Image 1 (cartoon, rainbow, N blue to C red):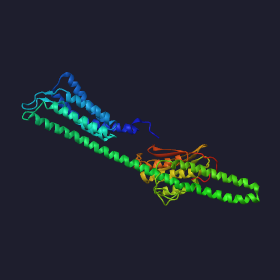
Image 2 (cartoon, rainbow, N blue to C red; image 1 turned 90 degrees about the vertical axis):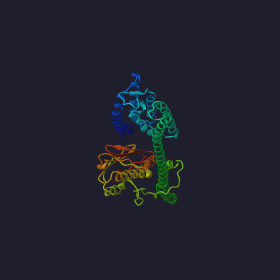
Image 3 (tube, rainbow, N blue to C red; image 1 turned 45 degrees about the vertical axis):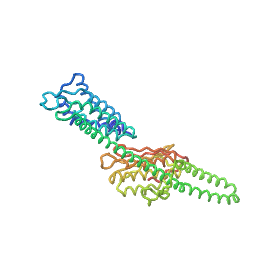
Image 4 (cartoon, rainbow, N blue to C red; image 1 turned 30 degrees about the vertical axis):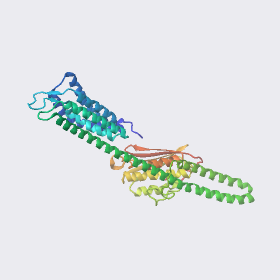
Length: 429
């Protein structure tokens, strides 16, 4: 479901956005920088170095979010070159002014501050943040020593150096502090999403455990009735006892397959006692019963249509037995997908449900058209726990789930393996 166009990929979109931002900053600062450099004289070799350093500073903005530490390292090297560059002699400078201009004062040097901010904001650990501050502070000290050699008339050397150092430290510390605050906020948000995902997983496992009652209770009831009847049949008609025993074995085997699938999910770490909806009820609507079999899909579709969603359902092939757990998984997938379309796209959207009964597996797909938003399907809020829960259910019956944007909308596709034992096509939804 991924687009083949490279600029549609998340990393490429970030890179393009930062490149556009770098161009905008260059449009503001570069004209002033060019005018500043045009008014000074420098040794020929250093003039090319200063131009290269300025270009490198602006280029480092492109890596601001894609690779912030690499961008910061590049910006530091460029700033070091500007600090070490010989001071330019200002041509036609009025008397009483500063006859030489430190290259650190060119306007493009200001691009170092957002690069420093991004290096701190994008860090995953505190060590790179502390290292960024140490490097920046060392650069400020070196700049203060170098630039302090050029003192405007009327200023004591020590006073000028103190003022200069404080001004540079204030700018660097402000950028660093804002980046650190952003990093802390991002980390807390990531922890919150992780906890929400873990809680949703525990709730889903607990809900699957409740579903086990629905899956097994009917089978055990049939087994008990068959066994009770078999005891009488064995005494009155021994030849029919084999049929009864075979029926008991078939029902028990099906229930055992369903239990194994559900228990596979429940073996995860730290299931936790969470409050979840009652067996056979939807998480988003506890008053809505989960249909008992695939022939009862019509009420689900009618509820979606009543909410303003256009729904079309198509079915191919001959139905066969998926087991109780498989049918519950299919119903949960369709209900969740339609509910998400209603919530995130809104009335007026159209969704298409396809059930393709292949010889070895059932393929279920729910695809919406994105509604009136022109194909921009909004991301699922939070951490995507709903899709994660669907994946748990489909995995419990040995299937696989894929979901993502497609053709201007959003598609959810699941493949559930055939358990065995065909049955009639039955009533179509």
